[in-house]
Length: 297
Image (tube, rainbow, N blue to C red):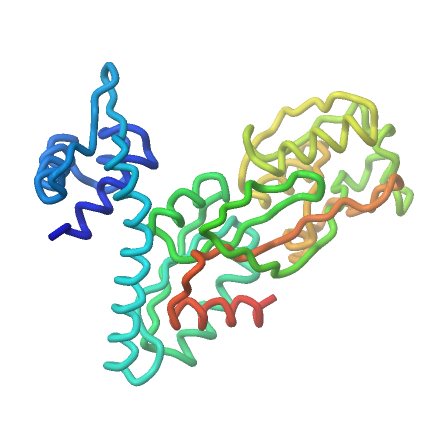
């Protein structure tokens, strides 16, 4: 009889690529992972791993088990949720959600409050995380839902085992100091800002790539990126205090930003879609949280 917990270890190893990576993700020691996988090999009656230098890779039998592990873990998750709902009389259980900062503040927090009032048997655990780091955790069942973003022209990878649902499409605006000469007009041409300092998210994020692309394609210049933070409120403060410029979505600017000017681009609109990502099979508790997120939007 195969043990589901050990199947999860095998799936984690496949996703992370190394025993040490799987151990870090699950909070085990590498030796404990190796011992449990050795037990799984005995249970399966087949060799599941083979060494390639200092690393290991899955054999054909190991890949078969990983493929079926997702189905088995989905079934176990659904069974646990159904039993919890029967015991409580309504949807119940833990739902783990990740969201980027502005969605956390404007969408997720109100949804958590609404679910707490309407479904006290559902415990929502929320963490701030960017899409790039949260998707692997969602696929490995360390998360149940992810609120992510996608800038126009920069499509995210498509995962067949995940379900994506759009929540809202918003405008991206130019944020610049009130005293900056182009701020005198309602629509600003990007070329006017070729000598400006810029504030953006960290390298490797969709926001930074969007800003670089807009400067190159619309303004014809390479941006002087001096300030980097994944906290949009910090970026706004850098605009206000240092004279930098930034491209920021409406979800951030809805708080009001004294001391800066918010303008549209003369070249046309930039947009961002905020979406909900879950595994293909949703428990009743996840469905309740999804509905609350849509209402919060």
